Image (cartoon, rainbow, N blue to C red; front, side, top):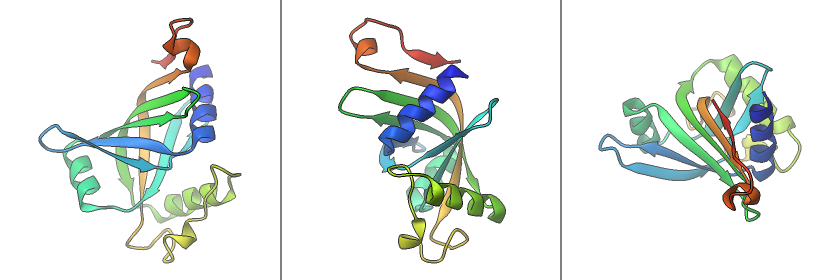
Length: 152
């Protein structure tokens, strides 16, 4: 549980995240997205409100995994390798939409300005991220002074 909480603290402070998918030929493609992470004491889940672009849809249909890497100039890093799935459930989409809207800055974001049709609109989708590996590092880790936090 320490790793999950430390991961959320680092990722939410950094906010923006490089998210990589893999195409059908095994080649990675990265983009910058804005995940929101929740931990209920037993399970960590990430959410990304995003456009369901043809590239993202095709990549995740072929290989439903992503690697999420938050990094800042102080060398703090939070990485989550995850199973990713599209969420179509209207209640979940609305709940996550509100999580983002109610979160304090810099994590919080009001998606109405980007997606005026709201969480049920056709131009917006929701990804659920279920991590299978976490890694948190900092400058002391990178310089060999301490071990990274990892899970599992």
